Length: 215
Image (cartoon, rainbow, N blue to C red; front, side):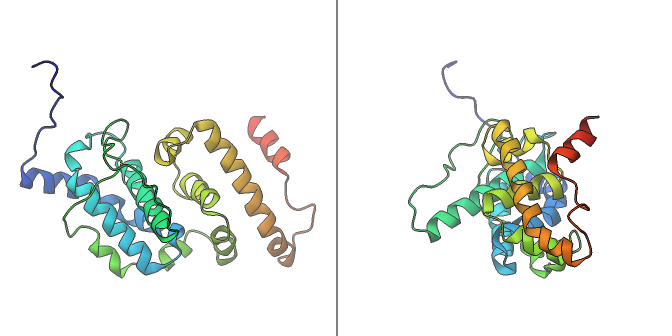
């Protein structure tokens, strides 16, 4: 008896729907922004958000109350995006959706629910409001791995620890990737900065920035 796996308690549909609405639906807007920044397409972003909520609904019993719902949903969406990218690239490997345990519990999930359909009326302006067009274009031009860490850290405010969980990489890799991503973004924005009247002496170097933050 003691050797049998511990079973997850089954929620009633009413309790499941109530908690799902209260705990996960408030993340809808940032989730859509993340999806749009990954896909760069409104329809694909809406589909990705809906798929994420469908998966989250099916395995909602595995979500532990009080943990980071935003990080949990972002990880589901990230893995769904990877699966779709690999499918389009004709790569057979897929994220294992059976790994429904550990930190943030069920990272991936599949199911039925009409959650996410409300994102259909969202527009690209929701993201453009956060950053200027030139910065957005520069960000969109980055490889997806670098674009993702900029989004998670600088736009969504995740900690390094949370980013490591969302992306399934060590914290050291998060730091390194973020540093490189910011450097790439700075290079891409250099020409735009000059056109706006900023000379070579107007932009602080990484070393200067680091020095200011550590002093």
